[in-house]
Image (tube, rainbow, N blue to C red; front, side, top):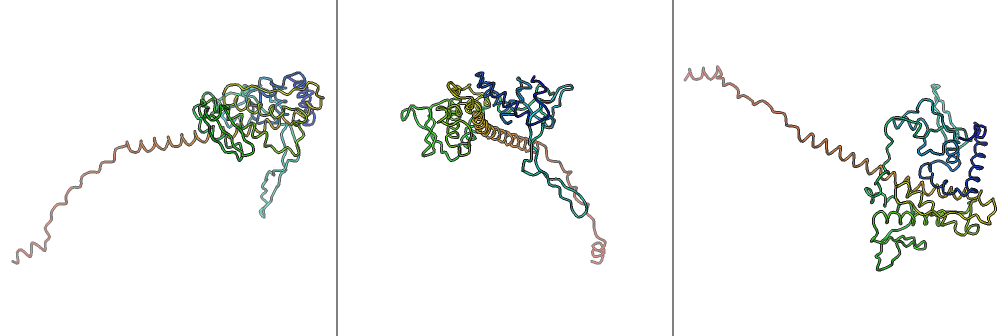
Length: 331
């Protein structure tokens, strides 16, 4: 646990502590440790990931108390919250003619404040549902493949036979095509697809205002980013661990380590987009399946119920009218 004096209730001091921790980790050759937590904590900014790790190196699944409560879990008594940095948004208060005030949160960030989060190990309640766990990649191969392809904007996907080209994949940034060899197993095909989509996003990223390392700063920086993205996404999908290309800081100034933080921002951004797209697609598919199953069961239940039996209608008793009798007498 980090010294409480370092993590004051002050976003500026917390940011500084996170940046210092980042520099120390990279300087000590612990780059892989930073990348290894992205599949678990990637939805948080790099600084917040570092702050979480400083307070709990074993954190795996972190949420605010409200989010845990929504999942029907509660914070275990005595557990202490971890502090992160959260944005403050501007607010607009509108009062109508009757004096009723309505608050509206605006999109504009006006500053930052301390937020509080808890790891899943600090909670208890309903089991945490994860639709990407286990063999999800194999069970939902088509859904996941399609979702991953959607994250390579503007690219068309094809296949090729080994007789045409022995390459497992061909990425063409000029014509914006990605071809995957047709004889690969589902798992290998997904791994190859993840790597190609990662590289396509790295090479196509807008770097005009980028402050991180560029190829003229570090020759293999594109490979570093792409491999980290592939590593993160594959790990989240419980696929085979991918080789991680690490940045080489030999003969590099300390400022290069500082600049690497922006490259990790790229890694986080692209990998989370791929993970979120995939998770959303699988969740949507499972929801539609469950909905269709429920509708089918309801229809079968209705069909199985016997129709209500109505009592047979008794024929009305025959009555002779008085008029008829008089007519007969008259005759």
